[in-house]
Length: 395
Length: 54
Image (cartoon, rainbow over all chains, first blue to last red; front, side):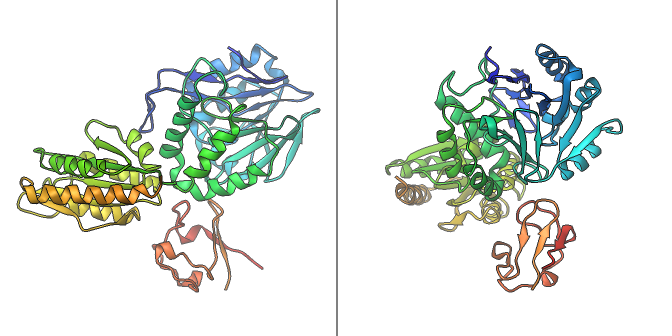
């Protein structure tokens, strides 16, 4: 495996082939926790790994240099998938100072027993010379947590971007030109949608700062390293930060006795008459991870649930909770659903959730009592055509 | 009117802009923001904001 980013700079992280649940994100492709070793007159490790894998990280470092030679351990982000290995790493590196910003220090002190750590607290714009190279620090609040920062090495035009531009993607390769770009970009899209979609504004501000840097390589803390396709991932992110719509609609539903499903199928039929990509997801068969990834770049969405016990189908409630936290923007849509005797919950609750998400409502909810009549199904087809026609403008 | 910064994420409340997405019209002083208002960026409350001295 090629782990060399630049001469004297190597990947020393951990490939997690088997993880399938990352705090609710269904990581079908596993993940990696990327650590990097910079050998210079002073030596630095950039970020650690999840706690159980610190032994592998230490072995990887020792293949290059003794641990006594580590002068700095940089923590760009306090989340435990990167910081969890820090206690083990700091204990094993007697000379090392933990380099981070003030907010990160506070967060790390709340996570771990740091009483034996030596600290070097840095601020935005500060730099540490390693000899031939410099570590330069850029605070990037909310990309992905308040303490998040980038570490930039100007002499190498190398940006350690932490969670930004990352992918939950385990593979045998470390670089973006060693395998299919389509696969990697799809994983980057899924990661963006499921981890940081709600922070489009701060990410946009961070992108502006990154655009001012001379960058040949971006080394994120998950997934492959960007060196041949930086332009492509930058362009993708410019679309993601505004949830830029494509000519695509989504019909998303839960169903009880197939009535709401029949309505969903009629909406899909209507949308398919238009020149758009029309996707169809039942919350019982498609995980929320996939759903929000597709919502990121859709133009419009119809969401349906029947009334169950005067409320929603619980699986739909879970998906709506997840989606509203991630705050997609620039979407239109409407709610639909069947009911028996009470119109509470169901389509009304879906619509309430869509309002909270600031999805612009295109019409009142479509409802069917018990079973949709031919008239209701035609109303659904017509609403589907309306969704499709709206999305066509993004061709 | 003074601006306030979120101590957690760095978002700045500018009373001249307000926070229209949360129903705060332009011209709303920070002191007049309801106590249940939350930072639009990171979700913390008013207590986590500090005044930006000119």
